[in-house]
Length: 161
Image 1 (cartoon, one colour):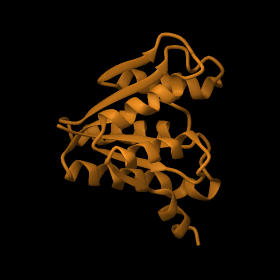
Image 2 (cartoon, rainbow, N blue to C red):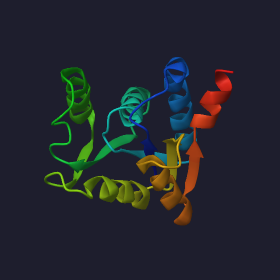
Image 3 (cartoon, rainbow, N blue to C red):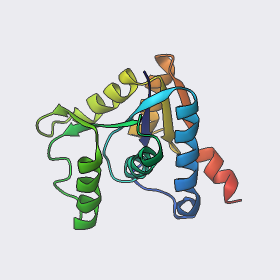
């Protein structure tokens, strides 16, 4: 089974909010057309949450799809707002599988999670605007490992101009 992972920033540009859900759904459709049935999300606020939501909705009409949450640690939501936690718990309840890289937060659990997202995927879809970010580091790692990568950020930028 082919698999797709997602990586992106926690902050979504306000100008992108109107278009990002549709573009993520289009990316999921494309990955599905390429044979991806397992979709891995890292569970962070922002782009990860958007992608998980869209996979959950996609599963309604594509029951062969699996949402797998590949999370850095069990208490990653400790400092999140109530609204963020509510979305996170909904995502947890809708996931087909949950994998934790670490039982508790460590200084490198996020990097380990990102490595695992790349290791398990055939295709990586991202929202990467800055070269100095964990998402960009994950993208570079995927390219180095020969994975197929797509960054939707430039497309979103062209849509708002």
